[in-house]
Figure 1: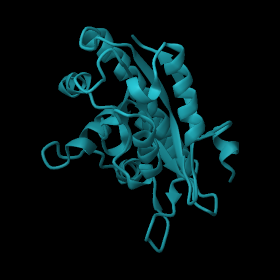
Figure 2: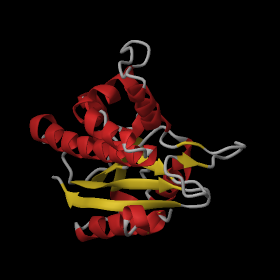
Figure 3: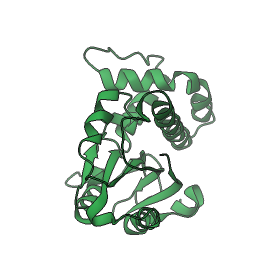
Figure 4: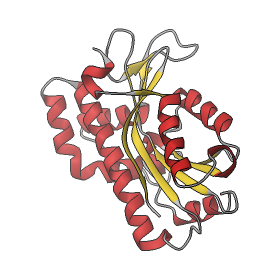
Length: 231
């Protein structure tokens, strides 16, 4: 299955970052000198190209907002800490980018990993959640598995709809639907956090860039869904 058949128009990483840079420049800032990225992604190693590109492109690099499954964290302290890393009189970009894999055979949910003989789940955390849902046990211990517990809790209102895709015989479509929900939950969460808690925490403009990262064996692609100024 081709990427464009599933995700429509997608960008290479450089193309995505060029779009972000245009927005930064349009706001009157220099991407290399003035911008810090708040990077909300999964902990997965398959983001290595994106991480490297950001560190190379932006002098301030990025502030990690990484969690299993790329569910945006709701910890107010994390954003307060991030605010102290933004260049003085600079700008910040919060990137919300959950991911999904497609292997060389076109199977959605798998990808070839560095040094591994066989393709593996991607995103592994989302596939773990789906397998738990299939087995009727989506309750993770908050003490021993806190990130998966938070992911499962956030996904609970959508569980039946996701499982409907699986019951139709397509695990890949269930993964896509779950990934979409992670993205939508995260976008709504950051907007709510700014409205209720963070509006006065940041003294500089904040941009929001969001989409879905598609990992393949040889290249990564990004379906850009949102690029706007939050503050």
